View 1: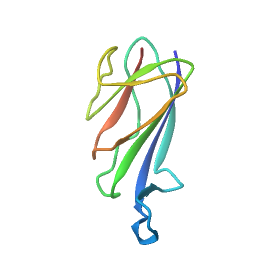
View 2: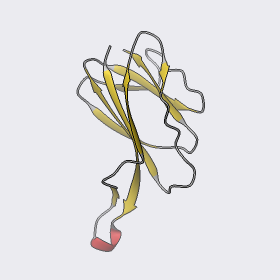
View 3: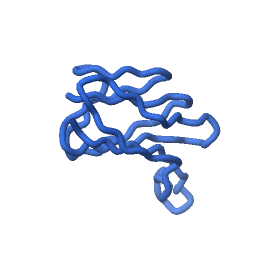
View 4: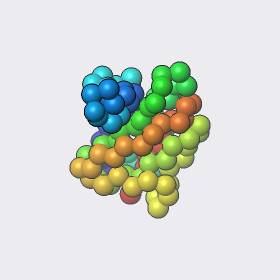
Length: 103
């Protein structure tokens, strides 16, 4: 069992200042989830009208597998592994959610 922090953020264009795309300082939404032996879906849905979006996922207290989709079901050995203490980021596809399960 792990605590999984899931944030949905927006990327801002920093090229006018010689930078690449940068995450906005305030996430669009965020939630804390607790992983378990069975898949659990998050409540956040990536909107389709907010520009370039990304998911930021941090695991604390154990490794987790994550899956993204319209109705995702995470499974051990499937899709993306987030190790204990690690933060990983992915581009968000509109209308998708996240699901997590213990590794």
